[in-house]
Length: 166
Ligand SMILES: [Zn+2]
Image (cartoon, rainbow, N blue to C red; front, side):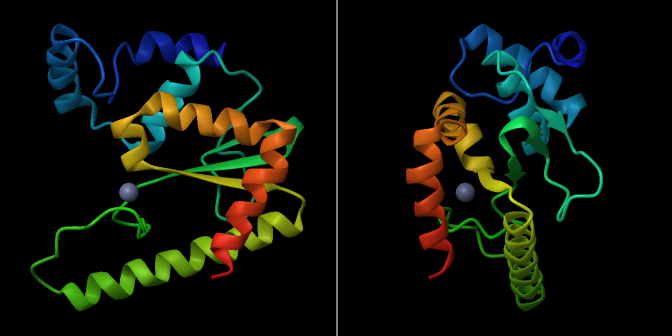
């Protein structure tokens, strides 16, 4: 029911690989909608026809944006700037750059601590970055779907843990 409501609510989204006509429509909508990374992922989930997810359940460390409760998977859709995405070169912030650096550093530390707390509660945690959703939402969804599978559980889960421990 939620997904149906979303389809009505978000006729278009934040994706770049759409037809020109479509992206012109999107630009018009974007101006008024202020599409966030979380909304982008939500729309991508709906489009991919994925089921069994919930939005921001209460009481979990770090308030994951989505969870797949049956699979014990928690998903964060994070903005590259605020969460210090390692893959993006961020434009330097002109004023108060030390302030922003410090703030982003704190955000990252908090993200990691929340990840650990979720993991100790038996959740597997996947972070989907803003740039992934902007550049290739299909790929981002593919990564998510892989993560949901048993294979993803072994491979990707391990890779993420090893990246994290660096
Ligand atoms: Zn990024």
